[in-house]
Length: 237
Image 1 (cartoon, rainbow, N blue to C red):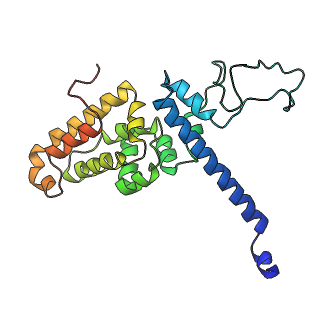
Image 2 (cartoon, rainbow, N blue to C red):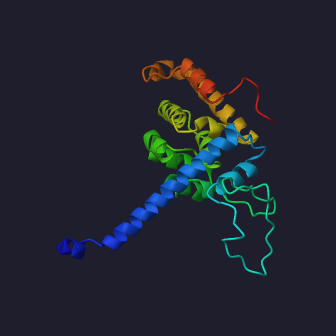
Image 3 (cartoon, one colour):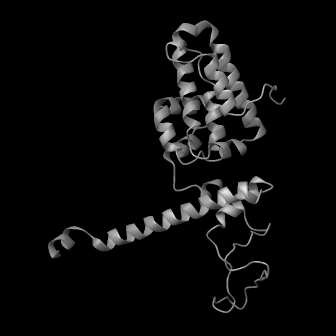
C-alpha cells in the first residue's frame, strides 16, 4: 500500500472524485429545475427560465445560523421556505447561457469562434453527424442550435451534402430534451429551419435515384418536418 501511495497521489484522486460527485449532483439539480420550469411552473420567458435553473442549487439564508455582514442590507422574503429556492429578483445580473450547461462543449466553443456560416458548415462536416450527436447528447445549448441551423443552410447542393445535412438533422432529433430545445429557437431561427428543409426538398428532384439508394426521399424530408414541428406557413419577412 505504501508503494502504491508513492506512485498514485491519493489526495489528488480524492479531490477529483469529490469534484466529479459535486458536478454530477449540480447537473441533476439543474436538470430537474429545467423540467419543472417548463412542465409545472410554466415560465413566462427565457430569462426567467435561465434564472430558475441557475438558482436551482441555492437555498435561502437563515438569519439565525448564517452570518451576514452588518453593512450588507438583506431583504428576507417570508414567503420563501427553506425547502424552496427563492426566485431571482429582476435586478439580478443575467446569467449567461453556458452557466446552466454542464461543462464546456468543444464543438460548441469552436462554433462560437467562427464568424461565417460557411466556416461553421465546414467544421460540422469535418466533425460528422455521429460526433455531433455525441457532443449534444444531453442537450443542444440555446443559441448553438441556431448556429447549427444557420451553418447547414449554406450547404452546397450536391448529393453528398444533402445526405450529410439530413443525417445531422436526424441526429439532433435523438438528443435528450430535443423538444425543449425547439421551444427556445427564436422566430428567425425557426424561419431558417424552414428554409433549410425547403432547400433540401428542392434538392431532391434531380437526385432521386442516388438519394433513394441512401434511403433519403421526399418522405424522409416530410418526417423531418414533423419531428421539427414545421408547418407549411412561409417564413417571417
